[in-house]
Structure formats: structure tokens, C-alpha cells
Image (cartoon, rainbow, N blue to C red; front, side, top):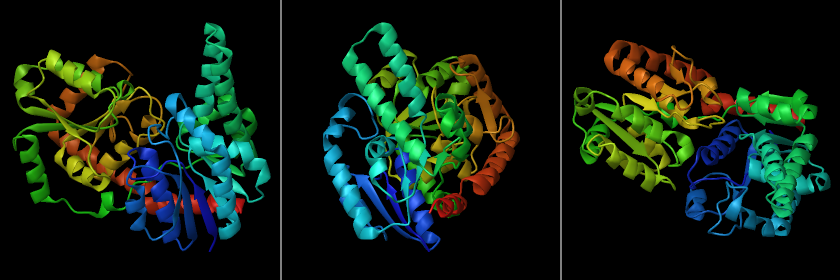
Length: 407
């Protein structure tokens, strides 16, 4: 048994794939018999949430109006907490005496890079977003556009923190092949210690049986007829998720097809008003339902409700929602780059289309609508692959192997 400390700024009940990935890391490692403790940033509802967990979570502060997942804009205000964060982490290390530490997201790695040289406990860094490459590109853009020394200095500070954290780590775990490639391009000196460990999916997404009464109740609440074909997207409502591409694809379908179809969008975000207005402009009001946010495990009912999961995201390092949909035996349409190409086997568990290719997206949607047996077969294959690769038990074993080597 090892004593494992997980330092993660992102944690539920705040919404997002990385938040729940960090939760699954902790649950999975504890299920393997290890003593696990977590340090995570405050978010609304976290105290009630962690009270129901069977491992300790130590909460550190953040400004309530500044998103913790962001390393830009208002998120930079959290750098005022650097001394506090260091003191809190140091205190928990002295008290818990971990054998090894998992630094579990990019924000945590940025802060960790400041004081990594002061901590003698071996650690492993998790790279879920290729932020180091993004900062390099931002620095070049700042220089080219002459946007000011302060902005360039901020991006350099973030880049340097991440790079120090990765350089001092025993191992680096990348969430996907695309993330590994991106990190290796900008930091070839750390490429030899990068392995791929994807995010895991909660065991309940695999084990809970189909709940027919819940599915029927959800259909009624959303105004979906029993014979209607259901498309589903689960995402933060931002322009980079490609939800407007889905709306554009639907607007080009024949009216007969549209009458038998509902597109359900689950999530909230800054692009919500834009997407609702676009829906109205494209005369899709009767065919699109914006369902708002849902508690994480209630997403199971939405996946069970749908026939096809679709999210042509412009940028996705992994795409946990694709793995969750697969766990419920649903095929998916994604974009042929980023982490989506890891999860979806084109033609085997779903389809991959070029980014922003509305016609290709429309054609694949129509293919699934008109090939029910093929859709079912791809959904079954997606489930089989997800159970082999993304079940929380399997990912925990991969993490365990790496942490043992590092300790």
C-alpha cells in the first residue's frame, strides 16, 4: 500500500471532464487499497460534495468570480494565492507524509513548478491539455502583434512553471496521443518520460442498467415523441465545441427528416445565447432542446435516451463525454484530430469528420439515421472498447503502476 497525495485544482461538483477525471483517479487508487488524500480548489458546493466521499479532500481558496480552469483573464487573479497554496501543500505533505504525489491538472502543474525544487517527495505530472504548446504559441503571437510586455511576461511565467514541473517530474502522463505529440514538440527534453494514460469513466456508466421509466420521463419532460430520432451533445456551451456546426448541418436536412428528429444539448456556457439565437434564425426551434446542466450521474439517462452522440469540437485533448457515451453503447461523431481520434475508431465505433466540414457532418448524421442496424453494431463495439480502455478500474491500475515506479 502507498500513501498517495493528489494535488488537483479542478474537482467536482464544478462541471467539466477534468474535474471528474481527478475524482476518478482518487476513487480508483483508493479502491486498489492505497491511502489517498486530495488537495483541490474551492468551488460552489464542494464542502457538501466531499463530505460524502470516503477519502479526505483538503480545500484551498480561490476567488469566487475567477474560474480555476482558466490560466488567463480573471483566472490569473488566483496567482495572489501562491504563498497560501504553497503553505497548504507543504502542510499536507508534512502531515500525511505521502510516498508519491500526483499533480493532476495544468493549473496545479503551473503552481507546482514554482516550488517543485523545494519538495523532496517524488511526483508524477498529468498533462490533460497541451497548455505548454498553447503558451508557446501565445508568446509568439504577443511578440508578433506587439501586445505588450506584461501579457508576454504572464505567458512566459505560465510556460516556465509548467516546464519546470514537467522537467522535475519522475514521469509525465498524457491524456491522449495528440497531447503527447504536442508536449513532445515544444519540450523534446521530456518526451522520453511521457506515457499515455487516458481519463477514466465512472464504473456506474458501465454497470447501471437501462432505466426505462427514467428514460420515458425524460422524453416527456423534453417533449420528445417515442418515434423521434435523438441526437445528443453534452458540453460546455462555447463556440469551440462546434455545436453551431451541428445546427448548420441540421438546417440542411430535408423537412421530412427533421420532423422525426430531436437534437438535445446538455450544458451551460457563454455561448448559450448565441446558440439559441442561431437555432431560431435557422428555424430549428421545434427540433432543438437546450436542457441545461445535469448532475453527472444523471447524464446516464441522457446517453440512454439518445440514438447518436455528436460533438464536432474544434479542440478536444481527450473528450471524456465520447467515452461516457460509448460506455452506454452509443456510437459518436467527432472530429478527426485531438483526443477524439483516440476514442472513436472511424467506421468501427463511430465516424470522424474534418473540423468545420458541415457537409461531411450532415452526411454522417444521415447515414446513422438510415442505417439502424449499423448504428447498433457500432454502439456495441464502442461499449466493448470503452470497457477495455476507459473503465475506472483499468485506468487506476495504469496509474498505480506508474506511481509505484516513481515512489
